Image (cartoon, one colour):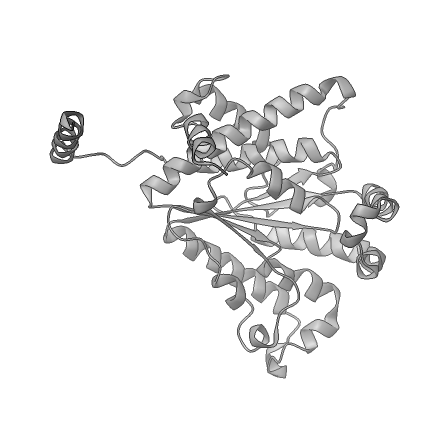
Length: 323
């Protein structure tokens, strides 16, 4: 990329929310809050997965595509502006956790929603099967290594929550985790839920906000996306027999997700149950939730002292005086 093009992109980036063309900051934040709060579980004590639809609460037609695209772009722009302030302030950090069944759209959501964010202030970590080194540590260890620094947004594509999902559905995995037999009791899932709640409470107390997204896709929509991946050659790489095999445990997974959200969604570290049968709508919900979380941090650019302003003015005058 040429220097000229780099400068052009830099100039085009929003410097603050007041630079956004379509909405005033307050209006935009309120719209984001309203858009996301209907999917926010908060205290999960009474959570039931069947109360949350996999589809938007209104029908999206072809004529709505331009509006959906514009709304998402507005959210992406606002998110980029807020992330810039988060990075400059360097006090809070934000951890986004994505969990879902295969083909629910996690990768696409991360790609589109975070498309305007400065790479310097964002880091994505994907977690697959644990390594031998991971297995020699506690179940939170491998994720702790990737927590975001202050001023940054961290994204977990799958996470420590796999330990109460796939491990719970497939008991043979738990048996291979080298735990002392007397610790593998009938209460192990409740104990892990408690460990996770305490871990996220600890993070909050140290300036890391955790918000979690369950992309709630229907079994029928997953089937359609699997067939699309098989039919389209450029998507073949995304599909494996293991993905199809996990469909056979759909009921068990839905039960595990319900228990997970019920036991680990809190007011400070909530789960969002996102209707994922519509990818564009899911991305708007996710962007809105992130904007809402960032706004709650009371972000502002660092205040510059009078001495610093005087120093900058002196440098400016010296530069202008150059011949």
